[in-house]
Length: 155
Image (spheres, rainbow, N blue to C red):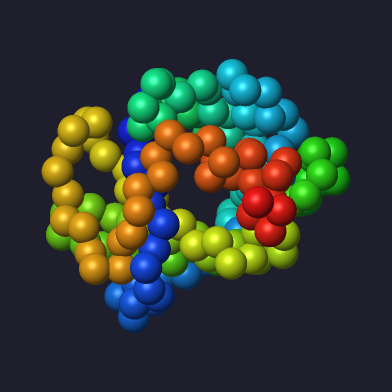
């Protein structure tokens, strides 16, 4: 239940041509404490509750626990979440042996597009497509829990 991921900004929307799937996501946070976040997410026809722990110093690794829940329960829990729900479209792109999840944000975070890649180990090598830009791994401003508190539009 350890998640290893890296985050990047994008320099173009060429990933859209390569995406094999796109899904609408609405999510909120029941808790955004600096040492843990509890997220409710509706992702297409599925819904989840997720607990994330504090990241390591580099921001690449942290504890993550996730469980699927009924969508009706998720809708009720979203009403209890802290202000500013996150709305985004997730594009999934396979590059080499890895999968990138690219989130195009809307609402208060419109204008932000970010790619994440999950890895098996922190120093794992992967192909960097031409649409991948500056790495923002470890910059807490880009955590969804923080985007719900201080939206991209307010930076």
